[in-house]
Length: 152
Image 1: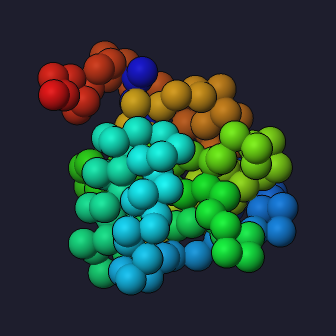
Image 2: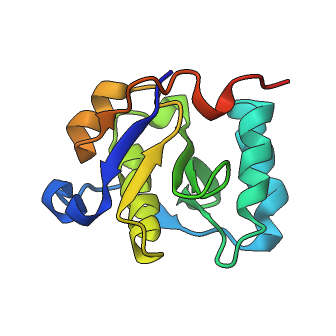
């Protein structure tokens, strides 16, 4: 999958105030690292679990979760694989299509902007049309397989 670039200074233009369908979008506490990383591994992959764990080494934690009561509905990391990168991110299959992923995307991209980045990179962007439509992301030519080439 190719990488995409996002103009972080234009986020307000794209943000339509999406609802997270009753989920609280927040940064998890470091005490929750084992719960969040375990959920990511179970729902997605070992690779994403590892990337998620590295988010907890940042202060503040470079991850957001969508939480409904005591249940994780989704997550989004940033600045973990490379600086300025968004991802990995995912929403539980039964929660997709409710705006949760969009809310997580904006939370993470805003965090990158608050750190002073003018642009964000969506690494190995899966749903290219979603990112293009939601935040105006543009494909980066020649970026496939990009930084993920040669993974063990």
